[in-house]
Image (tube, rainbow, N blue to C red; front, top):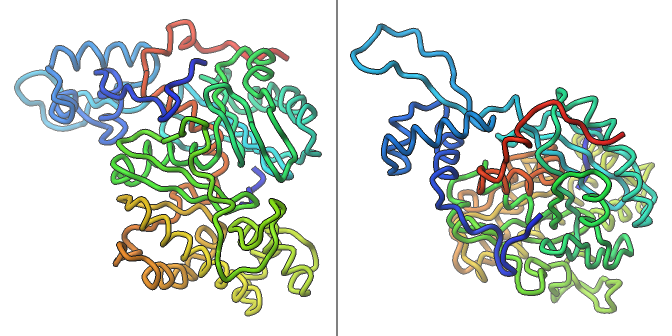
Length: 410
């Protein structure tokens, strides 16, 4: 999808699984309800007042929580109410999203809010792209990080990614195979580096910051130049033993005759990717430049041919969504796709197709949601793996890393 100008790994089958620690529970409660009193944290988590007090003190010392001024209400008997909230000033996660033509650099706070993002074109050769990231990152961080060293670096992209090894196994559109992203960038930056697919990273972000139902079960479908998906249950994103979970690019669409680079025809990605959509619009004279932003501008100006193009694609996406809903039956399915973000009036076409083709979903407007991160989706995806690691294991943030002021090497 278009963008605005802008460590140790867990088990092989799921994302980080230890969400039951009291520090993580306290941080989660404040993320959900903050600003909030310590007594309400105890009720939300079931932890004793002594444990809540100890954990909040530690989280404050690590710069993950902060005390706010007491409310200006008449004094009551007992200890004053001092609200706690997530500290969004002290720590930032750094992220890099590698798209087919550009790199998005991002800094995101502990509530998933984008503090800064910049978009830089690249030429596509793997080692040159990694070198470009290494060269660009220090200046980007210096411009926007408030003088603090980032908590870590997240790197996400489309295609087949192994989060355990930090390797991009295959990115067909870029022509990449077995690119050791973590090894190269960790050595160059000195930061913990987390690598994953953008669909799984955005699923992590939706679990942390989105609809509460996503924590129970979620499917995330990403439709950009790459089409892929992510599956999560119980707050954990599923990877699969080969890190291949969520590969929907080559699901067959029986009535589609379009050929795919994989050698087959009718594959989802070959039928509905942004690249295919833009090329068709350009070849048919709907736009003067083969660019997604140009196509979206034409749609927002009401060009009926372009609107029909987007509607047709949403109808196909609706069938794909219906298939995923029937296969997995999640509490919620989140769609990251250009029309869903920028042309929400067209979602009726999507919902109609879902209702017509799904056997289990009778209220698609309630189950199928556009991503909550809108035009900043790629920036959030880039940083989400770092944020997920911190929120699940807040004590992994050592006092040394919590100290502000250290920078990336120039």
